[in-house]
Image 1 (cartoon, rainbow, N blue to C red):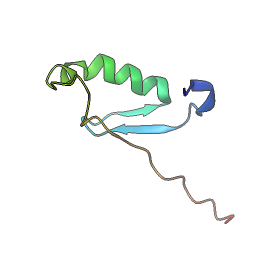
Image 2: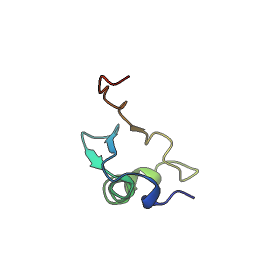
Image 3: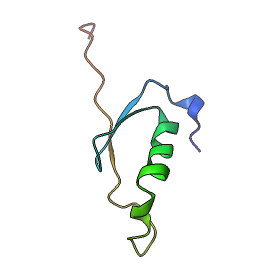
Length: 64
């Protein structure tokens, strides 16, 4: 089980269903429930099969 304490709140997610940027895992869950809940009703299995999120690669710091 993943909890918020295991994931930095500064982790940025981008929704592939709309132009929304979110910070932290909790924001992703809230966004899917509040904005895209209607999508679950369209799928026979009730899953959000097309609801994926892009997690950007960490920026290079030059210390590598």
